[in-house]
Length: 207
Length: 114
Image (cartoon, rainbow over all chains, first blue to last red; front, side, top):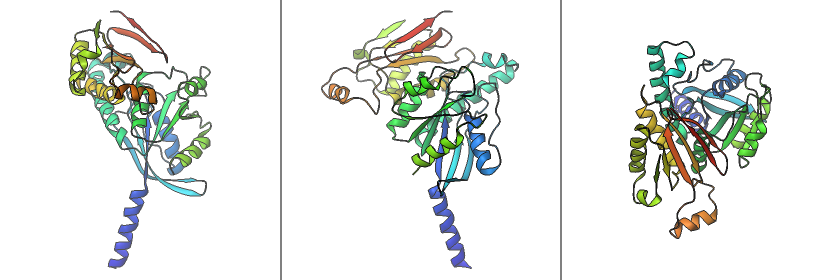
């Protein structure tokens, strides 16, 4: 029936329009994919991408569209965008240390540089950004500052995720001190610690 | 190391500034800019660097103090409107040469060596 078809098209059109793009930003190996996997698994039952100790495992934007998230009685339609880690250098020799041969390392480095450019281009197109930081590391890096400054300039809502609080050397307080103007949520994406708090903050920011 | 005055960069477009920086950095020079790059320029610097990365040139280390941001103070904005120089600096060096760069809110510490 044509009327039904029109109704269905309108429904899907507005459903698409309502979807909120949630971008996962940060340096390599801060736990972006672990967090994206946790969120994706909590709401869809499936993970998004592969996690590895070798830097730049995510070398292209990973998308999971129309993830239905229920927060405080509201249903949010989200597109999860797991970005490649942003860095100012990609040295193929770093991959050799992890056991890759020279050819594989050079290929990975080339793909990583393309991924970084792609992640930067997406900075303009996310509705909410989760800027993930490793709480065992110094947060005051140029990569973090550049990501935050560009999101601020575009007035894109930011939530800083202080990840890896399950590790003994975690110092999430340093992140809070470094960026007092932003909301900081301390979590362990690996163990799921405080993940509900993060969902609550996402719900508040994504109104 | 090369210090570049704010005057030397006056009137240059972002593209020209980034070209000037990368040309020097690729020749193993650490560049100190008297006028800091804007966040947009820093973002573009990372993009341009990634386009240039090769086995011989793995990338850069960069740090800025006092870059103008969306939350720049009214004083800074007025200073800019009155023709004053933005306070701060940007250091960019080849990652092969810059072993460590540590940024504090008010200072930058850089360790270089072959």
